[in-house]
Length: 209
Image (cartoon, rainbow, N blue to C red; front, side, top):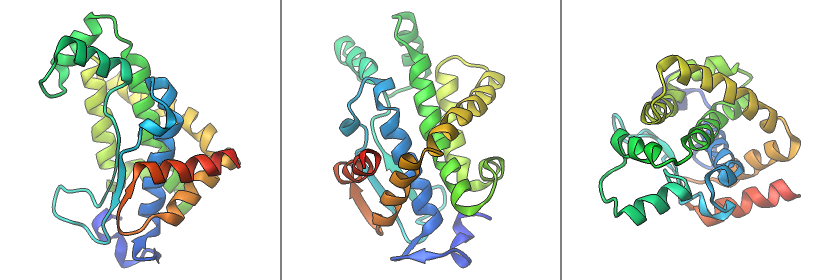
């Protein structure tokens, strides 16, 4: 079902499509869990979560979870080198030449991306493959493909990494405290914007009991 048509049959809670709330909560929990892989503290990786009750415009996501794109070592490199240009394949080639670890960065990005589809699959009873093949995962897949390309990976390597990291992410999302964190955050999401600080607090409280 297309994301922009899902509202016709989906369950709405407080004006938000429940499945979209679960999807974004999955992203947020995945981002927080992978923070150490990127050199960030758990409270440094979420800027905000924004959800609209209906599609905004063609090409504009109905929901987005925003945080730092780069790892802390990558940002430190850019600051020291005085890098002011936008993030692109050339910058990543420079970072790779400088010896920065791109593997953990890509893995963390991949895990947090597939976390959302795994959460949606668990909530809806669909398979992970079904969710990933739907337009609900289009943006996530595009991000993964772009990130892999920046890291100099081939298409086959990127596709293999998606499924390998999905296995790892599935292990975590099946942990009771992790799934509770996804549900706790989804239950608190409302139309509009939630600060990263508040979202992180909700997730950490659920993870730690």
